[in-house]
Length: 176
Image (cartoon, rainbow, N blue to C red; front, side):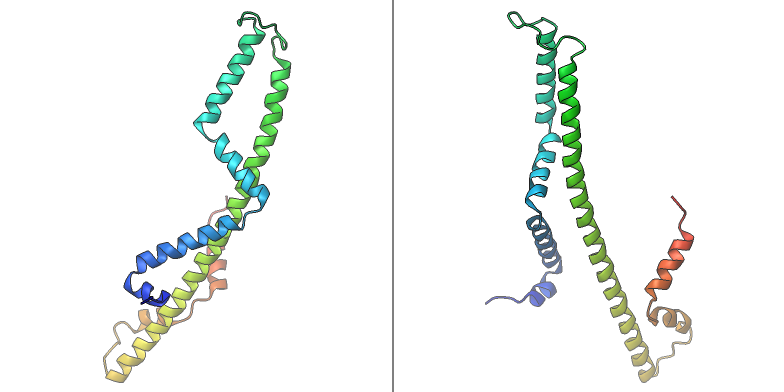
């Protein structure tokens, strides 16, 4: 017998949430363009110890060859290694572009997550407000005295004005 997603959420909410988050991440990875996929692969490689080691070996060999430290190899780029500087600076431009492409994609993904988090938080706030209102009505109907907590409960049972809250935060937060 197959269980529905709502049954899974009730029976094991942690596993349900993990599966939902994993699915969102898979979908985000699947939405990448070909350029973004290639850029991510390049960034993964250039951020690895193998890339560092490869660079150390290549630059060390280049310098050794051009300082006449390797027998039988004639210097083709004598000190101050102008050709090496050209290659390294060109490489740095391309690597920077690849890193920026990956960072832009990750920033868009983080913004989507932030919007999703805001939406979930707003829904939770609306649900909690409704629950408080229902509890107030149940207490009134049952004749339970709530005078000592009426002001607090009333403040929480009112719908939050998101625009007003955002404006207040903007006023109170320090400028950067």
